[in-house]
Image 1 (cartoon, rainbow over the protein chains, first blue to last red):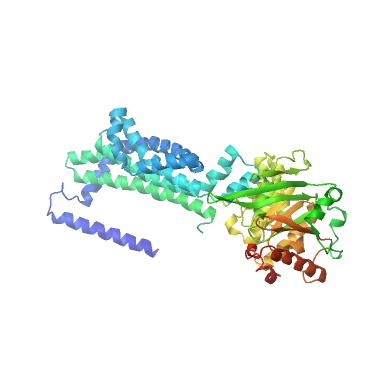
Image 2: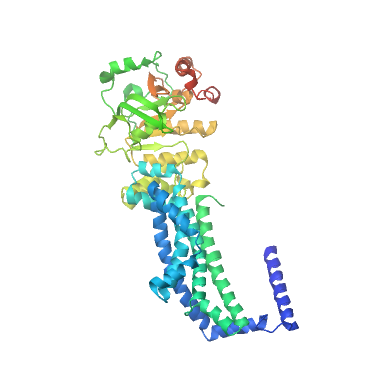
Length: 251
Length: 305
């Protein structure tokens, strides 16, 4: 409770200071936004539905891109982690490629796919896939061998071994891989949307810049923070805690 | 479940029978193998296995192991640490391939030839799956075999009851103590009705009190189910308390040196004179062998009981 009280006081104080700076009118409002202006822009964005449309377009892109990365990344990670040859070859390639910031794939992507959604989705996939695959690989490689031994001993082989032992045993790492992958995908998406303008949250941000509308720009940023927090804190953090509890890592 | 021991091997609790004081050497064992082992559950013949160490040297882990185990027997394999006991167990379980030799089993259940799922291992550390509840851990093997749901539930219940854990079926593994984990591991193996139970130092990590409870439980289960058990330990007292036959292994290369038929009843006292005699002989057998090979396997044997 005390923690929450402290937080409320902190944010209320921040709001007051921000309000006062705005009231002093030292800088023009396209330079320093005001709380009231941001609030109005936020409500405008909601009422003219541009925030909804933008959010929906962005979520659709990340949904497709992240879905592809999660599917391919987890499968690729498990296969690579279980095969020494693939681990030494493909594994090193995946780690190497990961050092490339994902937005660097955009020029290549535009040449391949043209100026369209597919290009941005490709960047999102490249951003998330590598992270998910590499974390899954290390997760699979560190499965306690005795689980595999016990499973085989009781008659689990091939596909059964995969679904009843390998995936559940590596699940804590797979989930942290998926969580990491999400934040990579989210960044890749924004970078892509900022550079190449089509409907989406990135485009709303750029629109704010073009119109010198600082209040609207901040309002969009708040929406981005909100979406990021929802997924990171609510979806993945809870998933992670649930799994860790079950495994007995946390109580 | 009925008591399915084999005649004189399974002495009645409390009555002390006679022990085979002298023990038999490998030559003697091989001589009258055919006559003394009319029936067998597992026949291990000429098993050898060597490992490559750092790409050059080959070390013979076990050499020319011959061991016939009768149905319903409780065989303890005693040997110093590093004598290849676990390697032998893995080979019997079908998890490792021997360089030479064969492991045959009597086709009691129809498909007795496949080691996987028929010769079940119980490990020293808990190999229970932390992502499943106690119930689902025990049901794991049954589900692999597509056992109908009702039958599966009924079997899991009866075996959890046997090991005294029916109240913990919804618990997760990390919520159990070391002894409880090994009880679940026992139930998980027994529920599959294996032709032989292979136990790899299963109680080595438990405290003395829990270990004694587990001895009682294991003997009770053995008598009730009549399962064939091959139990590995480096603790001589443990072998003397539990088994109907003690097989002594030496190390580097691991080979069988002697065996003792234990015809006395249960519960046993290690302090009794005949037990002390065998105990001394076994410990002597360890020491006779190149002393350096006994890697601390003896140190905890004298203090434990």
